[in-house]
Image (tube, rainbow, N blue to C red; front, top):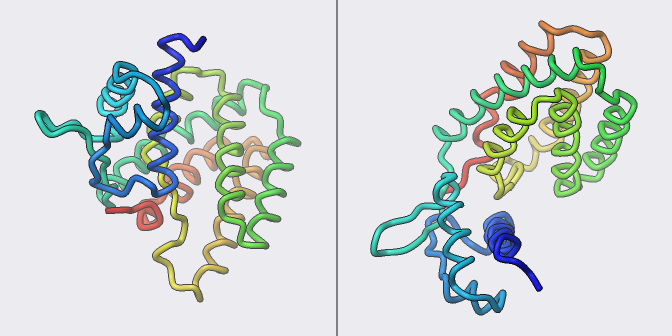
Length: 216
């Protein structure tokens, strides 16, 4: 028998997956009754999950109208990039100082990313790059910072890498993505704290990449 907490979490994950897959389009109304029917559960955990998503900023609650998905503008993405650049650079330095970072595992993930990009397997690449950054962030030992980073990255739950990019430019951009992750590995191996700070903050999370995450 599922308890109340797990039911709310199930609804939360369900809605997130609907947004990520594109089933729920930007600025679309979210039907509580449809979710209740799809998951065969009561309205209470559905409402609680929707309120949580709304409080976290991933969807919008309009009084007397209901809950709606949000688009993600370039301006919003740029703000998030600035935050994540500072947080993930700090996490990388803490991971380096902690002595808990598994560099061989990080290299293995980077190699798998290279293989995924060679076949333009973008969904697989996205999963691997999430694992890559999680490996570094969690090695920092700062659970609160890891949670904040994770919460901000939920704004990118609907990933559409390179969807607005001309096909002729895709190979160059894929190569650039791959080179950046390898460069982070090399900086960690070299123990270059200042290099990590400036590269992750100013290059890896450069606002010029905002266009890849925009959806309106």
